[in-house]
Image 1 (tube, rainbow, N blue to C red):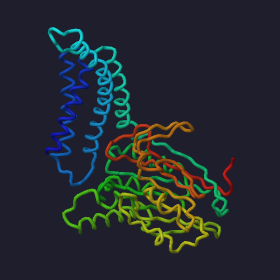
Image 2 (cartoon, one colour):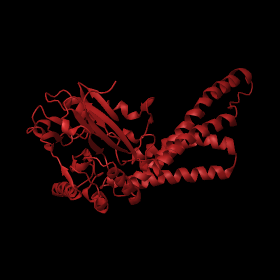
Image 3 (cartoon, rainbow, N blue to C red):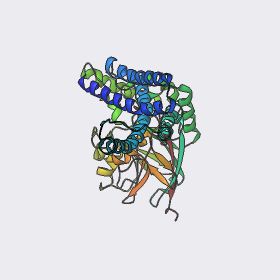
Image 4 (spheres, helix red, strand yellow):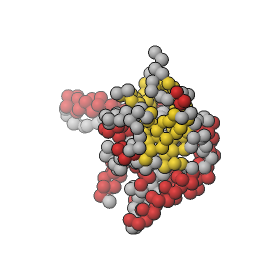
Amino acid sequence: MIRWIIVIVILGIIDFYAFQAFKTIFKSKATGYTYVILSVTVIGYLLYHTIFTDRSGGLNTKINLAIGLFLTFYIPKLVLVIVMFGEDLIRIPQALFHYFFQDSTSRIFYFPSRRVFISKIGVILAAIPFSAFLYGMFKGRYNFKVLNYKMYFEDLPEAFDGYRITQISDIHIGSFDNKEKLEYAIDLINEQASDTILFTGDLVNNRADEMIRWKDSFTKLKARDGLFSILGNHDYGDYTRWETEELKKLNFQNLINIQKEIGFDLLLNESRFIEKDNQRIAIIGVENWGKGFKQKGDLKKASEIIDPKDFKILLSHDPSHWEYQVVDDEYHYHLTLSGHTHGMQFGIEIPGLIKWSPVKWRYKYWAGIYEKNKQFINVNRGFGVLAYPGRVGIWPEITVIELKKGQQPA
């Protein structure tokens, strides 16, 4: 409780400081009352869903909404605070100069009035993240993008030249609230008419039963050579409280069963072969292995039936696995498919010009295709959302990779 009191005091200081801009511009009590009511409502909603409600089930749509509203209102206020503080860097020296050198008799300390122009600049700048976060919650989270890649490998079996793979990742179904939008995305996946669909983990936020109301929609996923999947860190039930260890194990088994009912061939440190014209490629799936996360992935076990000369596609949820174990393994894993980072659901991407997100400070490989030692990884930006129920600049992704035999064109 002491921690939350400190948080409330800090937020109160931010609100008081940011309010100075609105007071300077509008000079009306109605504006003040509206500002206070909105701030109290947002903080109250957040506190209610983080302190006074049962959070044993982990993140859900209501908690996500509370986080989203908080970010939507308070990141813009931080922008306002920075602008207002910048003005104070001028006002404070002016006040001190007046006090010590121009008013030596009365010694009255006063601040020069805030300038309306500066306050308007602050409000305009704050409106940018406010609009972006609001858009991200209501539109951006459903702005599904199909990203197409052609990837060339000299040792790809000829029978698989032109073979198409659709990758999806990080569904986080417990954060969905719109069936129409979800089914639009599923139809979009099927429209790619790929040979196989590969899912790289995090089906749920916390519990297997999150998928029950959505399962029928996912059973519509189809691909000629089948659907393959692995687990992500959220699929183990580690981020929720269980009354007994047996209930946690039951939840895990239920999740495995649901994946099978959907039509996924779940790979738990296992491999499968896709054969065509007496040639084959290997699909290898490891359990979650992440730097700072659960590390159940066993690359050796998953590859024990694989010939070193096989063309290998590895499914591994966390891209840090590729960085720390896969890329330097004695086996040559031609293509690794990962997810996990979500691209932080926030960033700036202009193809050919810029690709940036704060998540790059945590993950070296965080979105798109990377190459090292003639091995490749694609880090999918994710299908769903978690915590902040939106996306700004980093859109939900459906990846389509066409395998080509030969050298990469210049």
